[in-house]
Each structure stands twice: as structure tokens, then as C-alpha cells.
Length: 185
Image 1 (cartoon, helix red, strand yellow):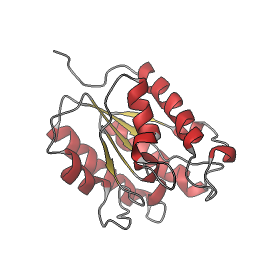
Image 2: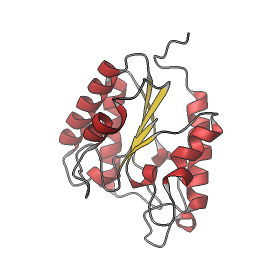
Image 3: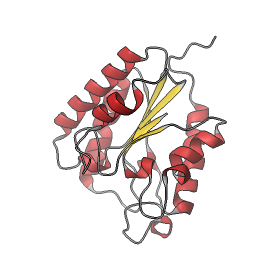
Image 4: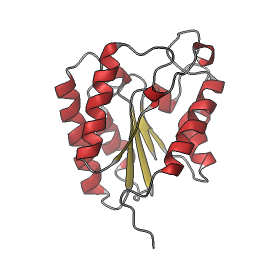
């Protein structure tokens, strides 16, 4: 399962079934279930009026526990203090771990096409600490530079090719990490 913002659910000409989330699941031999909405984040409610936590509650929590939940975002949380973002991430991770204690959870930091602003690094850093303190893995897409050639004309969202590149990178990262908590049959 994936929970995230417009990068995860799709934007512009990229529908949900062609996002990096769907492609990552396919590359890993899984079936994607994608939740979230454009403009959302740990604190940002976007136009849909809900945060990642509320999206988890209404779109995912009623489903059977997945083997893996990827929570990807932070891009839309720049206008809040790092402390507030951290508190919201802690609440979400506590709820997820309490609801699905055997599920592997991975937090993916903010995605940026081109050079991220300074505030994005602050958000990334608090999300990494929240993941570590919450006992889940953290993957940092800001260690890579995603060229603007794979961004849509808005300069923010990835093209189909951009989603494919992100998926190849993320599937590799997820494949390298040890199981964080899921106990097999």
C-alpha cells in the first residue's frame, strides 16, 4: 500500500495506475493500493480537506493489513514548522503501528524535481527522525537529483518517464532493506 500526495496518486497526464507507486509495486511483484490526494501531507489538507492521517483512516485502515505500507510525502508541509510536521508524523506512525503491528512501514521523504528549497531539507530531516524513533525505515529521495527534463511543465510533478525513474530507484531501495517488522507465515 502507498499513502501520499500528488506524486503518489498522480497529477496532470499521469493517472494513479501510472505513478511511481503503481510501478514500484509492479516491479516488486505486488498489487498496488494507493491512498491520499494531491496537495495533502502530514499537516496539509490540500483541496480534499484531509491529512495523511485522515486518508489512512478512511482509505486504508479498514482493509486487511498489507505486507508493506509506504508513506511518501512532506512536499506540501513546508509552510508548517518542522516541530509540527514531526508531531503529525509521530501521530500517524503510532496509529499505523498500533493498527497493523506486523506490517513493514517505510517513510519516503519529500520528492523534488530539480533543486529542493532549504525548508524541504528541514521537513526531510524531521521525517527521518520520526521514522527512526517510530521503528520504521526511512528512504530519502533527496539524495538523488531528479532532472527537470523528467518534470511536467509545472516543474513540480514528474512525467511518465520521471515516475518510471523514481519507481526503479524506490524498488531498488526497498529491495535492499531488511524486513523492519513483518513476520511471515
